[in-house]
Length: 586
Image 1 (cartoon, rainbow, N blue to C red):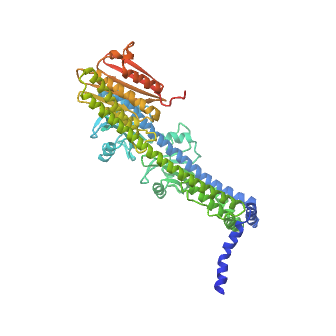
Image 2: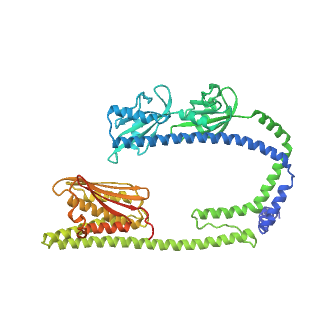
Image 3: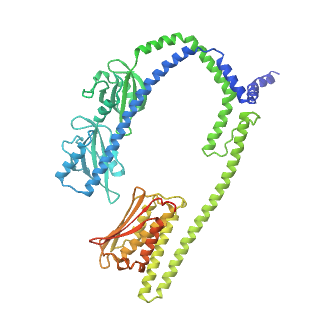
């Protein structure tokens, strides 16, 4: 008997929840409002207490926001260093300078940026090649670990904060220099001190009494500035206003956030702090707490003890009622929607399908989920079929092209006429190149998608295909997202231009053919140049109709929406093509 009664008592909450779930949404919301209003909140006092909380929160948010601004400025300084070093390396590659000129050149560039110092060039062994005068970089720079990191990196490397030769705290940013696209040949390095921190402190117009402190990962104070003072005044702050060691260590440990603590002179402060993206630096902005407001807050809390207790009870009752009547079902429905949006097509709401609003909404959602799952399965099955068909088609096309090439080579063995053999060899070579291009385009597993590295792989293919002991083909291609309709015409044009250069540029000797494929704005520029023979006779004005290669090139260029320009030079020639990356619809 008692067991049955206990079972009834245990099932009572479930029976009540099921009953409330059958209520209309309006009835449930009215019930929540009634429960929440029972204690009779004193609105004016509550707003006063809320204002106190908001003010304290505002102080913390301001300190954190100002620290974020300082840290973001540090990131900008690092990025400016990268841009400057890229520019200097490009200038040195295009205009070599002597050792004396190099020192002047590096000094001029370092002087353009007030936060940069000691612009230096080193070789792959870490030896000094060239440096600006009065270098601040440490005497042990670069260390073996830093040099090894530079050798393995493709991007700029930033050191932790260190101390310069005159005791100035700085970081070192270094950009590796590579020759022939891969081999590490040295680096360019620059020292970055903290003068930018003083500059941004002047610009932020912080509240009086605020401080800006740069702290290392070990909690050491690197620089410390005060906010008050005019533009011409010294911003160095007294050492008594720095955060105490315990606070600094907490900042170094957490890296980002807001902390309340004291400075060395015992004053209470709110510190917002943020770790920079590079250099192991933490920027802390300290703002004084408002003691009068704190005393007011203490008195207010004593006065509001009883009302706050009533308010807490009311909120607890409202939370319990809303959970039982509304939130529980809405949470189930929302969770199912989130799981479905994340790809779980088997997600269902598990909400009872009653005749009221949430029940009808859950029923509609579950029905929609069933329909989407069925459609998705059909689409996936068709996609797999199309993928298999495309793979089989590409495989057969490649096999057929290889078979045609084999037939051409067999037929060529019986041809004795020299001119005819040249024509057949030319066709067979074009066919082999086209076969390689087709495999390049469609040989990947995701052959339907756009390949952002297509131009790089095409350049390597043509470079390997046509280079020989006598003629070297050097292709410099940028990664360009060529649309698939333009990929084959571009490959055919490059193939024809390189084929022609190999045939006619160096008939009696050795040489190099240079190919450049780059993107300028919304256009793609292709250039094929050599230092050999002049423009072939069949490519000269009036004889173009006799050259099948030039007809192919001009036809493919028209398909791309561009035009071919032939430029004779003092030595050799240059053939250029420019076309839009995205050709407008006709």
